[in-house]
Length: 135
Image (tube, rainbow, N blue to C red):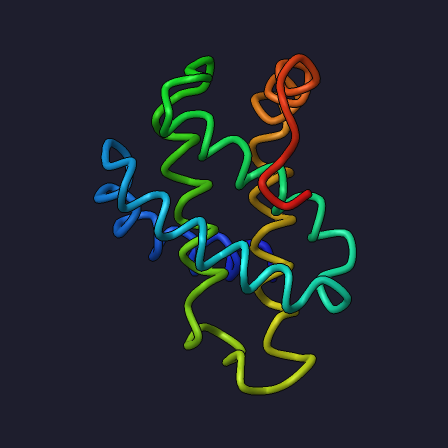
């Protein structure tokens, strides 16, 4: 039940993700917003912090053309999750301090589980390149 609700919410944001897929400048703006929010909520995000870092790195590498061993559907799913993350009005609004970030973390975790194979392949590739934008 909870997974289906999370999936439904994440899919709503995937529609907006299409505008980012082949637009590096727009994607960079989204990532800057998301990275700032992640840094400001690092303590509240818990384990989702590291997952978000992977998402940011993957989307950035894809957008720059450095890593393309991932399907466009996967990138759209991840961008959708990032859009959900930056949206102040989602299932639990972000102005509810402490609680507002929990649903964001749930969407990030759910997305990672759904895409674990491609994410694991990216992790292997990432070990051969430079540091994350969050480091």
